[in-house]
Length: 391
Image (cartoon, rainbow, N blue to C red):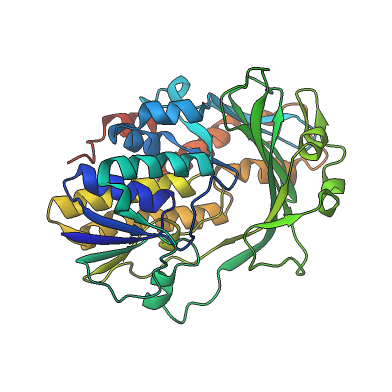
């Protein structure tokens, strides 16, 4: 079986590795850019995707470049605790949760593809522009502006803008909270997300990823995914966001560069596949970053697709397993996913609170967290006991 993969991002490269591990070795990845460089900012790989990378033999490599997140904490604008829960091994998972620099993860996967499939397995400067191909299967893993998806659905148009904008950057700074914490602070008008994405440097500092999310004016350009902007563009929004355990304006102002992203997704599709074409990752189900599931779901897509092909069940079986799940995650993320607790706390107590249980009962907080785990497929006991997708 010969497979062409459009896109050498996280989903496309993991697909190549998964196919190879399943015994499908005639695989070529076509990438539009001429040189793959470690660009981007942070990404979270949740335990159900870490399991897949570990079963591909990449666990040690991932551990060298990532930070095992031990907790996720939500606070309001004033720093008052809304919800905190353990993650990774501390939450009973058999696999960690990692935060990592997206570009370093991509290069790690690229290195593994070249080692296992050969140096010619990835062809750069070679965009896939449509559905014509000379393989048994074309996998469109070419992102939210996928040419393969556009060929399947030529009338779809532009991604759907949420009305929100993200300003993102990375900064070397002292660790905050536990040193392996992921923090979400704010409400339904503005949020700050902060987490470390690399092991500590010799001087003790760590590379910290930060994101500021805020409702944007209509003038924000929605077509540019990597627009560098001046600090003055947004700094006034966070100038007084100082907590005992984190100086947000200090962190933001020390970044080497700041990038502006429109927060967009696409509506779930009625189908992903034809006889010789299928979609995967952001080409299939681009989603808002709530819940940190974008990269995670593309990795799972790759493993399920490889299993379906290697066991003779084909792309229809892959789609039947993945499209309903990811469609539900897209819809859930439009409602903020687990980050809904920030919105609820602000709506019910806009001036703050002394005890969150006076505002949101603990049982409600627990159900919001667990409901999203069920939707996205990472309830600890179910994940730990699920059969492997390895062939």
